[in-house]
Length: 214
Image (cartoon, rainbow, N blue to C red; front, side):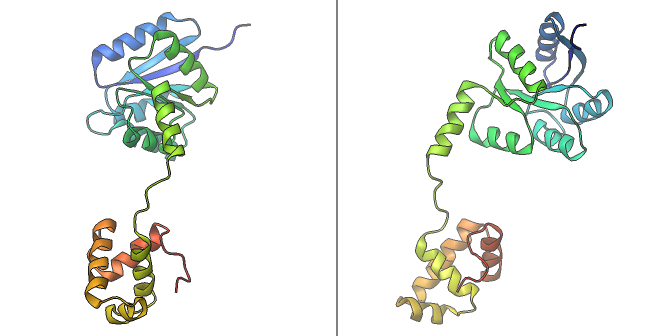
């Protein structure tokens, strides 16, 4: 008795890409192409209806993009594994896709054999990354993340969170009130807020301030 074929759904807004991928996988042993989608919304609908084993998902598509579709599939309890197949390999594309639930991330210039292996691996729940994506993630892990706020800015914000006025914070830090205001303006800009209360709330949300800060 032979194993059941891996059932695929292909989502890409370019007809030529969809046709090429469909032909490639349909002619490869062990695969069955269930359907094609031209955007994220169609991919979501077909994935829920057809229940494929693997969805080959582009990221940049009109209407609902691939990233939104990946997250929505997870939210709706789809068991399909998503293998991202795109031309973008920057952190700003890779990390959100993985965080949204993608099992793998490949580039469209990957060789045929690599695509076939990746689809088989994804069907079994194995993480698959193109070499350039893997290298990018490794470098990100090795490099310490830049600190959003300086130590002095954090200290100022802790004093503000504890209810100190600008004058009181200045006195405690032995700096001028004008310097405190400058630090606060820098903090607002870095956190994307416009006032003290919002800065404190955003800092707690991001984990920059711990509950019980002085």
